[in-house]
Image (tube, rainbow, N blue to C red; front, side):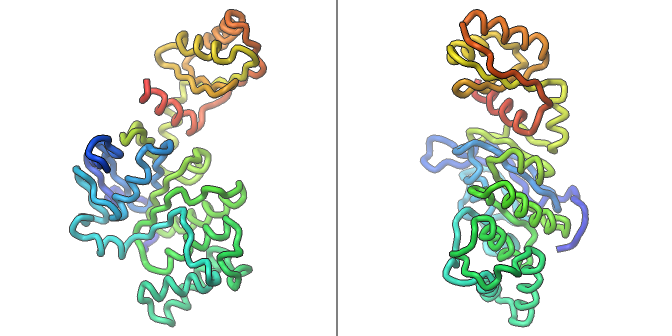
Length: 319
């Protein structure tokens, strides 16, 4: 890997990608994007949105039903082995729990055919870079969730790679563990690694991703840099509201009275409104509380986040 900034050369290119498992519904439905060298590319979506299918296609585990896909300029249908030699994949499953952290790295080095002297050098370098020295002799079975994830990512670094695919690697980790893992990944990206990152956690996507694609029902809804997406929604404000009593009637009435450019995400007694006219929307909330008999327990107006962009994009796709 060569250190450097992201370039326009696509590391991954998908063109009108479609995939169906049963010949009826499409898990991927016309997906197109480029991933650039040296960037962290986030794929965001709900369960069943198509994230895992997309990762499987890009890591040669499935062959898409139609469309074009190249990885490092290679065709997965013809060059699967060559692609696998140049990528790393970290999924949610665990492996090699029977051995130590050091043993995990050694096993990966042997599997990749790395000579012993070079294997030891890389192992020691990774133990240092991922701060694994205090746990190097512990069995993986005895590690915390965050420690296991760090080992999983470090293992992949035992062989030279151009792209690392991370499929929801922080599931089940607490805030501190997530941040430690994300910081470890950031260090590798600064050395020129390209990372493809799927997650449910919008906060961590905001923290680590250069660009994100929001997908739903197998379609890309929005794709841009994190900063550009926030700017795109910069003219809007987010209003958080919690009501007591008649919540269903309140939110149903609110949905019917919002402007065409506004969106609502409601669950139980709480809702989030993305609006271009917060003053008018606040007045509307007061009016509807009176009309429906609901009591406003909490109102808050704040700046938008990547989560607001995600909610708005998915809400509009289902209208």
